[in-house]
Amino acid sequence: MAAPTVDPAPAGSAPRVPRSTRSLRLLARAVPAIAAGVVLYLSFPPRELWWLAPPVFAVLGVVLRGVRARRGFLLGFLFGLGFLVPLLSWTGSFVGALPWLALCVFEAVAFGLAGAGTAVTSRLPAAPLWGAAVWVAAEALRSRVPFGGLPWGRVGFGQPEGLFLHTASVGGVPLLSFVTVLAGLALGELGRRLARREVRAAVVPAVLLVVALVAGPVASLVPATVNGPAKPLTVAAIQGNVPRLGLDFNAQRRAVLDNHVRVTEQLAADVAAGRQPQPDVVIWPENSSDIDPFRNADAAAVISRAAAAIKAPILVGSVLVNADRTASNTILVWDPVLGPVARNDKRRIQPFGEYMPWRSFFRLFSGYVDRAGNFVPGPGPGVLQAGGADIGIAICWEVAFDDLVADSVSAGATMLAVPSNNATFGLSEMTFQQLAMSRVRAVEHDRPVVVATTSGVSATITPEGAVTGSTGQFVPGTLVAVETPEDTTTLATRLRSVPEWVLTAAGVMAIGSALLAGRRARRGAAAAQEGAGSRTGSADAPRAGEDVDG
Image (cartoon, rainbow, N blue to C red; front, top):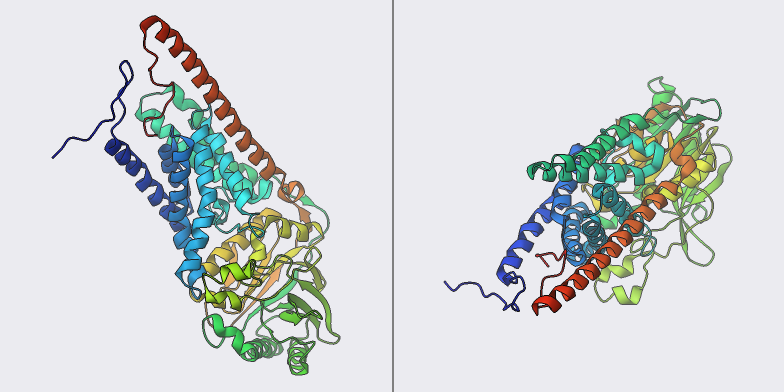
């Protein structure tokens, strides 16, 4: 077997590392990076393995330690693919593998940028601190661009229970992500230092690890500001179910509506018999009436019948056709006497589903493009008054966006409702991932949350993030709970996006500082090399700080 070829090196310089060796070194970092991404996916619901996240970032931190930015980008990108491909597999359930994988590749670019930034800052003092800030910056980026962003899969959304959760009440999802990543990076750096017997150097990561571990318990001691008395509210969530799984459920719109009417009338019978308490408000899911009740008298009549039977206003998820032939994804307040009295239109509509950006371009890749809707976003803060309460409305994926939920709470919402339609995605993990987001929002804003879906999982959630009741998937069901809407303000509600911007700025400045320090070191090394060359006749010494992995 031939020996590996070594590139010739000028006299007086360090020998160049063989290409085969560099490839093996890259592979030795790439495999753990991909594996760490897969394990991060395994830490997300429906599995209750939140504690896997810190070890994941411990491994990733060691993998990224000391490599150049371009190598860090590649490793972060591979980590992102290992995480996103299984996490977002539900997006390809009915549109095929190409759009799903294309989405994962695009979103993994943000993970690549995070990997590059973490690698660059890995030589700074207190490197885990800056690396965690860099990851928050990357999450902030992909939560906004393109087409309004995709916050799905933020590290904090995988922590609906466990040690770090209550940091959400202080700094929202960004702080929850930051503390989780910080714990992992500090753990990895601590282990690396101890393995090298650098005991004194291990003090800083040890302190950072302790800070991260106590952040959640300490945050739970920070009280919310009480603005007014709490008033109990009996809430019912109706899950009517759909006739068949799949994308074509919209072709069965009347059957879906009839299902929700029937389950509501069954609840009314149980109330009349004393088996269930009388609800103050009933929540139907998104798309429970895809038939526009303002244009179809039959749909309006059966909704009115259901409201009269239950003797309470119903929040009805409907699709309304506007005068310009666009559509609005709407929640209507349907009073048992007055009929429809208020509406809230979805404020952030879903690209590639409710509308199609660049339709002619994306049609080249998938025929499903033409199945995307022509919806338009609505105005307002997303609050509806029903049953004597101000209810914040986050329609389906809106719950993933910090600003939308914060707008509702700031506008006076004392509880949150998440009406969703997850039937399109079958028995995938999508509904559990969304439920985890709702649990984090409950803690972030100190609000009870009611999730109502067409096909499951519907749930009732306390302000502490605990699930007190839930339904199965693709079965009809009813949840009735006495909630206590909270008129309080958490620090996270008050600060809104400030923690995210502070952490993002810290991450960006740390990258800038590391790059400047590296440039100065190279200039100093070049000057020293030039001086040595003038004395020895050789100017080919290796650059200071050059990474042998390239």
